[in-house]
Length: 354
Image (tube, rainbow, N blue to C red):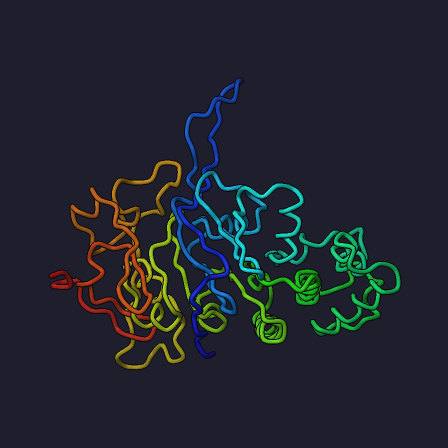
């Protein structure tokens, strides 16, 4: 899959985004702390690209996606959306009518195709709901549009009279995709869109999403934990750890020349075509537990599990900084570490730091 040409202006700019959920205890529900689900995240989403958000479960990638659609309102930070006419909108501050217009352009595909579809509604009602809500089509015209949408995602138009229980998991996800593209959006947030599907069905769904992207000029933010899927569909990749982005760059840069030790550990888990081949990689196994987002460690959040950590890592949080070619990483030693990519053997720990 070819890399996109990054335009001068992004579709969405995210700066200092935070989502802190209060921890409440006692009869009076006093707030005694906060879970830092997303903690000072900044990135851009460019028109026409597929940006992957990856990381372990609980790292904040789904929460980030839900804030981009304003399902969740951020605790702090800005999400600047660039309209087609050149104007901008601050997503976190949008009121009801403006938010409705924004959600016509930014849609979401949810993870679970079984729970994301209302079992009491037919496919016609599920896919056509937004067409009615935005006064695009009603009655016979709506049926015709839903039939066309079902054909776009590889389903037969006569299926529109059926209920979700009559479909397989892959077919349900296709219904969810049809619902997402019904309003011809500019940006789609795909939250683990294929993780609940069989491998063969995953491939079909990814190919469908790629074809729809080309046909309707879509932009994707693809939330996932399966790095094989991310490598196949994404143009750029942002790696998250305990609510922070620790690395972001093009797919090829991140997979082959990672700049953060956490990314190196993730890349070492990517399956190899021939695991027994000579000169293959050694698995980088992380020790310890993922940091508690309610009580994160000082300095770099990753330092308790990092085999390269020094006293500086324990005391000082590294900024997300440029390493060249639009590749950013949050590591004090990003310029001196020789980290292994997905298809390389890692360098010895000894002497890795200057």
